[in-house]
Amino acid sequence: MSTSPKGCRVLVVDDSNTIRRSAEIFLKQGGHEVLLAEDGFDALAKVNDFEPELIFCDILMPRLDGYQTCAIVKRNPRFAATPVVMLSSKDGVFDRARGRMVGCQDYLTKPFTKDQLLHVVQQLAPSQTGVV
Image 1 (tube, rainbow, N blue to C red):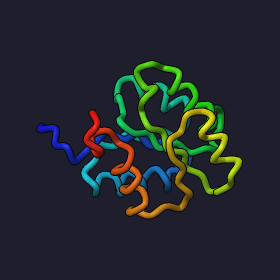
Image 2 (cartoon, rainbow, N blue to C red):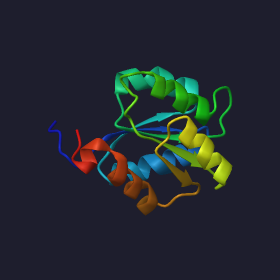
Image 3 (tube, helix red, strand yellow):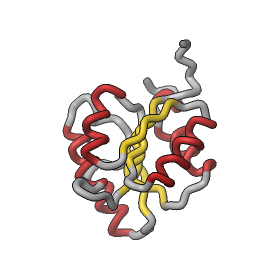
Image 4 (tube, rainbow, N blue to C red):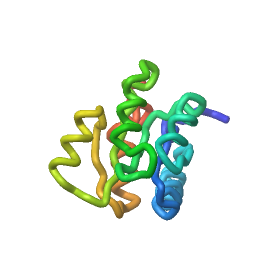
């Protein structure tokens, strides 16, 4: 399989099956490789093997929320530079600020469109921006 500059590895972490599947469909239509995780613990178990170039992470999840998940990922030197985008149904200043404090690069409000999702990937994923 050739590594075309078009696609990148994206991890989608959300406890909602609907959101995970929507994101997966949109991202695959954009030519990206997608791995799904249903919560923060699931994501942390998969991140080392999958080595995502970009992570979409829901904020409100059971056991380990998105802020905690992002903070743990960012503490690992291998993934400190990996962009994390928080997903939330709330679009509050406090949520955005808290996300920035734990190291997230962007914030996407649910429900999102295919264009919104792919635009964020294009803006943030290293293989999309020419920075590898």
